[in-house]
Length: 459
Image (cartoon, rainbow, N blue to C red):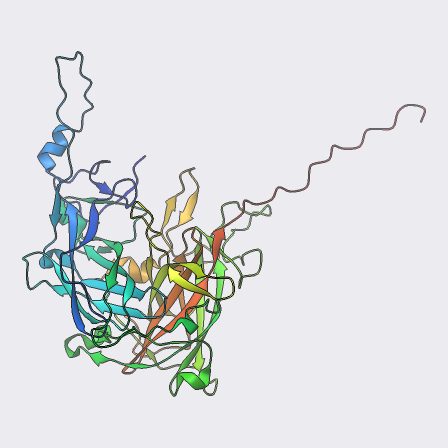
């Protein structure tokens, strides 16, 4: 059965079928591709260019092909199967998601240099996106792009399991992602690029120290928290003295808000701690409620002057990691593509002020649900109050010291998680390394013992 997210106001002539419903997995009607451009050089301003595309569907041709066709004989042919018709999105077809049409995340091969940038219309093509950056390191980099469109305007429906938002006017906005890796050339004036391998080892999973970076405000969109910092975020390895003044210590706790098998006592299986050491392994494939506590690194005072950053309390970037090097000198890198060019998909989420809340006395969480393949329900793992509507709910001008977000880890060796937030004119990125493993199935209870036999006569 096809479960689709439809706009609140019906779009005329849009019929949702398996052919025109984007689910991001079996039917992927959106993609991002790198455009031909000179390779970036470390230490020099560079322009990265890319194309955002959708599969343009001929509605009349699609409707004529809805009925199944079985040729009665070799001489009778069925209508040809509809092919792909990839079309580049124009800038005016992109919709702002968290105050920007295009978010671009970059991560260096050693996992040290993290960038959160924003795209602009291409100056070379009618349809295309470009982003300006000065990379600090040479070598492989991971690029992840996130964007949104009004899918019904393109003749596309969206499966309920895809992160999306609704507008009061009937729009439906799926949040889309694409990724690939690229190579940055060595600096022309130095023999070797500067690489901080000493901090590319595994970071603590529950504690981080974030350093301030001066940002530039977009005065026209100050209410949405549009600030820009185009350089790499410095990662501190827990040494407060090395981080300098103004650093923030971030402590993290998490709870599993999803379980496949309800407990035997009938209570709902939400907000349960994972069975095991949370600092060692996180459950893959399940929605996790992550709560952050922020304090001053140099005194421990609560940080209560956080401010909105791009429509959220924090932006969350999740990159796949793999351990490399030797046993004596291990180091981390983002997971490289396999021979087919495939790699674990990165993630993009958001955090908001406060803590995870309940909806009512029945402990029904405020998140949309979608069915598991076997018919059970699962949490969509996003806060519908903020990420489910356009325009989103506004944030207070200041808040803190607690934030919460929801993330889902896909199976992989590990993940580096960045929480990107703002205080006044400073931007920060707290980083954690999480090792993930599939949640083991619940162990069966003790065997049911038969009732004792009645005593035999004469015993």
